[in-house]
Image (cartoon, rainbow, N blue to C red; front, side, top):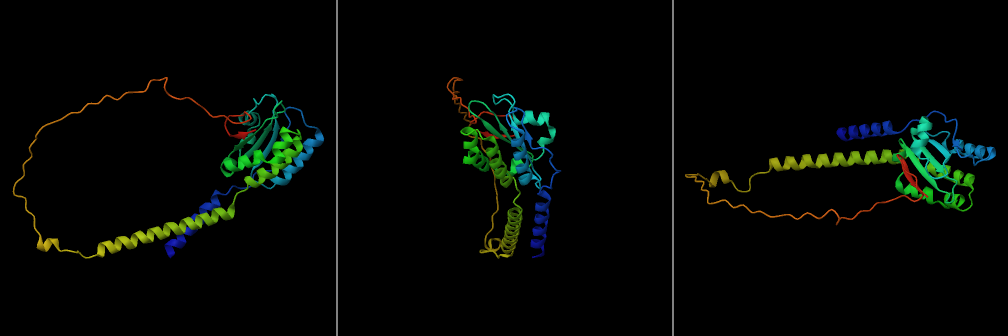
Length: 246
């Protein structure tokens, strides 16, 4: 019991240490590099970002693509603004014919936001329809901020319960192994071979009767017979930290 309690305490302490601390206050959330938003629209998005991420360890950035051709990636943005590389979620909107948008995550946000959550965010009707159909980038950004905030929030209780459960499983398995090993060592012999059986070797001969070597030719497929293929992401985008786009 003492060992089990010690293991649980160690796992709990490690779980707490893994939780991210609150980051410094973010001063700017919207980077309208393409110049497609008005001052009032930028202010509305900034206020929503402060609401959802003001007390969060993560940072969020709403960026408009200055190239208009889905050629401005997340790594381009963090190259221009290095502070965006730490625990951040970035949405880049391209005001082109297809109205593309791409999601990037960096730091601990890359681990906290799963691929399934990425798809839920990108395919949410209030995000997808407002960008692709209505070109209401403000409404889409507000919904994106809400969903991204929920997805990037650490699950404290889940992590603690998982750590405690893992500690209990490890302790139970260890105890079971100790009991089985002890019972095996203390078990008496079913038949006393040392008393009723005896083996003595009186002669030993090693005779080489022959050697056989088998050879087989392995045919290699020609270079043109293989299949080539690749996978792409809808909506373009790319580079380090890219999680998907539409």
